[in-house]
Image (tube, rainbow, N blue to C red):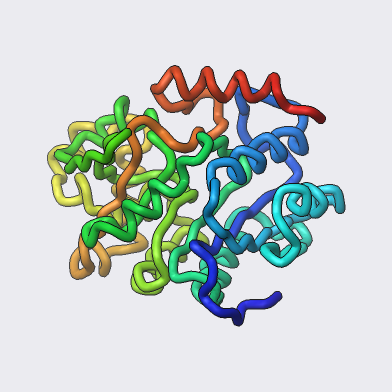
Amino acid sequence: MTLEAKKNYDLSVAYRIYPRVSKVPPVFKDDKYKLSEFCLKSFKNSLGDLKAKIFVLLDGCPPEYEELFKKYFEDEDLELINLEGVGNLATFALQIKILLEQKFSDTVYFAEDDYFYMPNQFSEMLELLKENDDVNFVSPYDHPDDYLLKLHEHPYQVKASSIRHWRTASSTCLTFLTDKTTLKKTREVFESYTHGNHDASVWMSLTKYNMFNPFKTIKNRKEHLYYKVIRLAWRYNRKQLLLGKKWKLWVPLPTIGIHLESDFLPPTSKCREFMEDEVSKMDF
């Protein structure tokens, strides 16, 4: 694995993939390889003219998955890392290590293998991150939980660009953009996920929304995840909550990425319609 290099890339990506379907996706439900290619092709198209260094964590993948990445990216832009089924927690820990140690770019992206991206829109995330001091993390995904759960009811900030809005959020999944300086400062909090913390609890330890209102926690304790997320955040990241910085996570409206889990599609119908149209164009 080559980690030393000049900073001649727009971003470095740690892309983890494994050959089984973990959720219930809306497309290619029984074929992870086709689902993987569908997502990878959309990621490449979303990058547009951006130059990305891709570290691929192939966790128990057969050889054809290596060829899949070579189909969409030049060899010089790829670092293929074969792992023997080490699992979700270990691959996330490796993502952190790789992105902190690599020297290709100060901008880093954590990628999971089940996201569909809108074409030529990834650059908007980079622009938001680089042009705003109060943007620490950017998610491509407008998560429906932000509209449905009491856990995510809180005041938020909004920024407007020429084609979309961005707003602060309390949490997201583990696909996100940041920079090495921020990742280094928050590494311990993210690594708590590998020790049993919940991904939402990791994020809420950083953003701190709804973390200091015990009355609201008691009131909403029967809501799915509410009490669990609050409890785990305090269990694993008490020091960050009490003494650490309040970091800002931003999400796009409308969404740039669609997490392909049938029960959690973003609320933007045109994005879903575009995704379904792209399915029909795939030439396997």
